[in-house]
Image (cartoon, rainbow, N blue to C red; front, side, top):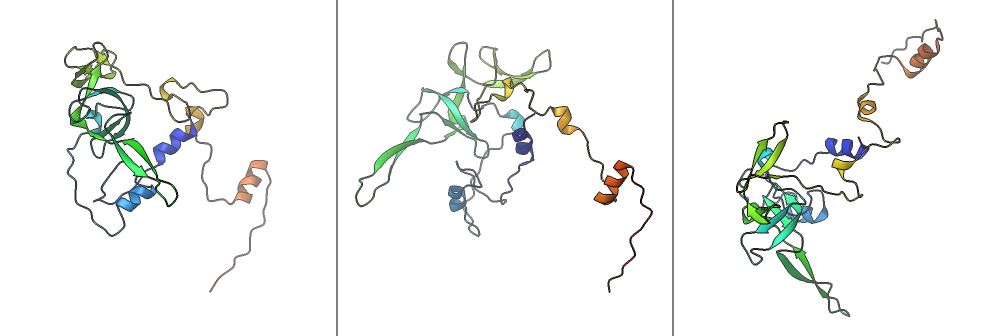
Length: 216
């Protein structure tokens, strides 16, 4: 198990109750500008979807069901569960004019905008057509996505991290810390001082005791 995996399990972001999520991470400067301290923004109602019922993941191939890119297939590059959004690579783009200065005319840049979950459908790899899915268990007890139209299993996509590692295919090397070593309890706390613990470890007997002192 890698150290980054352990740190990601321990990291938790605490946001206010009325926080309005967007496409930026809550700890970034753009998100803080949109949610300034002391300012209450208009509440956005989002249809609740349980974590175990979420069926789209980063790397999935989906088809757009509504909008200017209706009928096109794209790859999911980001998922925003707090807003029921997905972002597709190169689709549903909008253009912005940025960089204009006194001696430079600026330029147009394009960026993807998020789509609502109900406006996309997962593509069945067997026939490349959109389909609804449901979660089922195999005979081995594995939870999988199953196409309601064809009955075929649609496996989760294998996603490569920024450092080039695929977690599902990672194998620990000789220099990686094993899960057993990580969880091994190597220190037992006690009320002894460091010096007393070292002396006990080395078998040194000390009969002298510190003289009591009183602070008034």
